[in-house]
Image (cartoon, rainbow, N blue to C red; front, side, top):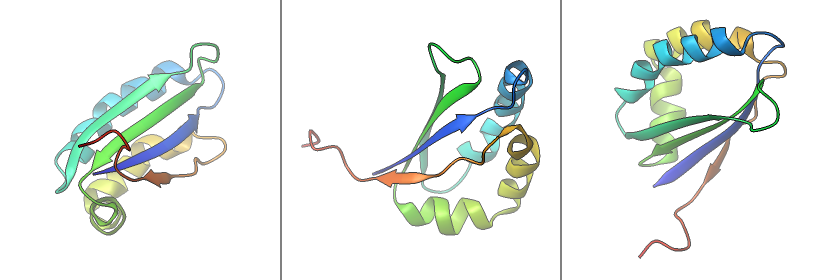
Length: 99
């Protein structure tokens, strides 16, 4: 399993609209091959910062699958205008505590 991680900085005053757009976008990613889960959490002290965590079976499911799909184009249209700056995506391997 691969954990995709991103810190999302949303434009000032756009948190509610972002959360609504994310709710609309969630099914687009959830139906992708290799997708396992998504979690988006607001920062406890900054309502315009969010942590995005997505679990994939492998990096290629995100990078070569979702990112090259028509669903990703819709995802971008729904969400990318909220970000300033654009987030950096990082991938992490299996937990050191997995058996």
